[in-house]
Image (cartoon, rainbow, N blue to C red; front, side, top):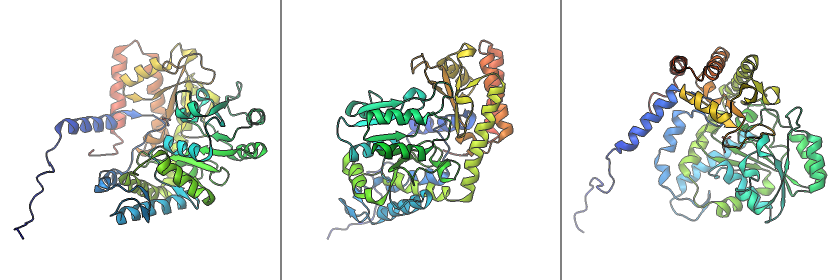
Length: 422
Ligand code: DSN
């Protein structure tokens, strides 16, 4: 045999990509110096970040633990089993699938599993808080299925369950979707269940936004009432970007098939392992306390904005977010986003119920508190943020004032550091 000796692997470069490194450093700086009020964003733990950046990213593992289409899966099998075990403990379920790459993938897998092209879905209107994957005409859901919508009540701007019932009885959908991406009120999953039972439809709860609040007991549970619960792992759950499906065990084979090979190929094992890390974190008592503080902060900031004369959609919030109607302030959501970004406050422009403006312009903004709560900010800081938002919008033509506000924003954000390195 020739003299095979251990040697350095010269095919793998250890050279640092300075271009990308610089971008990561700049992004870290941005995250450290701005006030992030995007309701769907959060700061994960360093352990989640480390796990995502691990060698698990190298492994293909199509299939499920113990039944893969690839050899060498013994370690990733363990990771996926651990993620499943922890997710089931967290959600009080006996079956879950941790492979969906995102909330949308999770939703699509449910549709593929139980619907045929042209079947009817009843879901929340996008403008009233619903999500693109619940039937937007450009989304696969809107192209392959017959979509019917329920709106919020024009007076209360909250879900009108009688109205949902009446539409359901008329439409007789095969699937009812409850869950939203900009709805600030409690969703009564039990009422949706009653309606679904009355019309013989499946019920899917998309808990992408509220999953963390729900597992902490600060939002009613969907797992015990809906046929399918989908979630994302990166919003209030504070894990890596990804999706999740929870259902009764009787649907296990159907959902597993729908995820793989239905809508996905190889699962991302580094992300699944990072989901396991996040689930372990969310099982701790400190996570319950965190969820409670998210809502306290959201309510405090919302009340402050109300006292400053801003109209809040539905009059308030029960969860991690609220939507502000800027119509009476003579501002669009798009303009407000520009002003607030210029001072380092990061929000979404957002349509409001019955909005007459396009989704690119919007009459409102969406504000959420998961990220600032992770930073350790409390009610005092929420009042300060409310003051900064209000002042920036009032003084939007005054560059000197905006610069002063920007300095205050940076200093407040830097007082609550999360990461020391990217
Ligand atoms: N989940 C959405 C959001 O609320 O930001 C993005 O699709």
